[in-house]
Length: 124
Image (tube, rainbow, N blue to C red; front, side, top):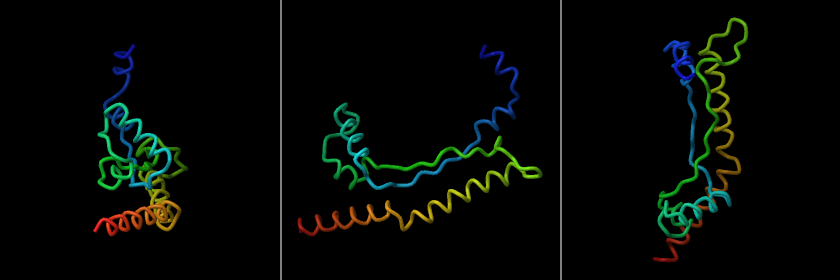
């Protein structure tokens, strides 16, 4: 069955199907992040220390990723090229990231950074 499927596809078609982009950015830790980090430590996939310390020293970092944006195979409007559809999708991601710059995640990250700096000062 796999041979029949592969022989029915051209290399060009297969390349187009896998050609996609996604974007990830550092995210503020949440309760989900804490639970995942604790699960990773309980199975020895992550060494034991506090979740805060893992976040602080970047040994376990939460990421927020976009969905895959296909370069080819998007729903095209009449006369629109694959590139134009792809560029419009990417532009919508850019606008979202720019909006989020002053959103809830940024506020959580600022709060964490202030707490980290305060903890450092208390140690000194």
